[in-house]
Image (cartoon, rainbow, N blue to C red):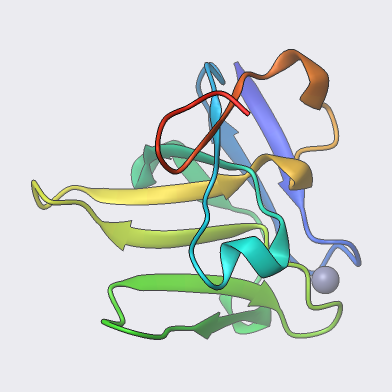
Length: 115
Ligand SMILES: [Zn+2]
């Protein structure tokens, strides 16, 4: 299934392909502030449909994860990183996929326990 995602103002729009079998409520210092619900997919499953110039990037700590956000509205639809096996991954904030019924997605916290 192909899901459409966007920031609030629409300057960042993307599609992502796959079945959403669950999401992670990460408890790191930035995710706990943002409230993101993350769905991890291989990076090639995600296609940016708008200009990369509107995508800003924040990194911290070990700078291994690129936390992306919109330069206009500040919403953070996704992040990118390379996993331990060297695969490029995208962490999609499923709160930015308007067609997804969030109540149907099992959410786990960072420790893998259901919330
Ligand atoms: Zn925006």
